[in-house]
Image 1 (spheres, rainbow, N blue to C red):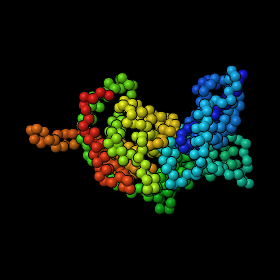
Image 2: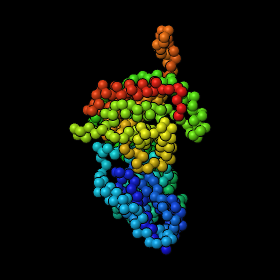
Image 3: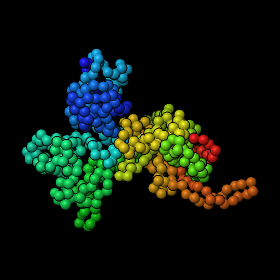
Image 4: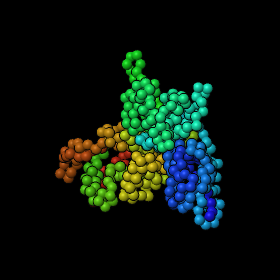
Length: 461
């Protein structure tokens, strides 16, 4: 028998470590190829580490809740055959070492350009979603050390609610081997003082001392003497606030708006959507059509696809478009479609549907939310006709589209002007006036509208 060393793989350019949140396999368990061995959490997303080999788990080198560096051996798997001392190619090992050297750990601050991906990757409604807490449940004379296991989620809720270790130890556990679950803590809080706490993926109108909509802690509200509700920002909302303030302070925002006649686009989609779904097994929405037009316009105006580094303009080689999406909980996620200009319309549509589906299922990988060079947001989904979004730093522009409305419009024909009912849509864009002036910004957004207005109704997908 031989030993295979399971290594924590590289998970993205800026990810150098992860927290082991749950061992899926126990020592002695058989493992098939691609079986999940351990669940991990990074500051971007939560994911699993699969086994590339068939064998038996011989030893776990780290305990749950420990932080592991990329490239470290986390488990030993007994396999058939000769000893496997180096399970990864030499190039991968060098890549990991370089990554670790180039990505030192830094505390999160309000000026970090990586704040938004962290916010976006915290998807609500997932029971096992961990929260990395620097100092959960400090031990004091009144809070003796407990040998009982508590998940990071349970400890975070306890810390948010001010539960002492003694109180936590008294809560009956209904989980495996008597473990305390999230629901056990929420039930205890309800009976403790009439505090109403909701499940993580629903709204709450109870009252207590703190609040927030982070999916790992219940929303709580208190009322002051005047009857006003006081809602303290949770960690996620504070990060969003800091990132938005940082963006406005960093970039002098300027805005442009155009109105586009997208009648041809609407008619084309209505004509092909049933056949497309039958052939591909999924819907084609307006999102990939607009993203394709944005990518074409970026090719025409590459100086929109930039970022600012001091007094230098960094023109991006790749066109990576993030699509901002609001989840039912109100949280935001912006997965990124890489190299959009190299994809067919069908390829863009599949990427849009795949990223949206994996976002809702908490299956995004760290790289899925990184590397964006331009952001698109569809505010028309909420019935809005147009809006002025805030730039997602360090990008230089963000484009929004409103709802498509039937309106009377004047058309020029060979027989003279006529009034007809057309499908109209507002397109707005916020851009960084340090590097994008009105002429460039206005020309770019007009070009996006032109591509949408001139849609070929006879086009095949």
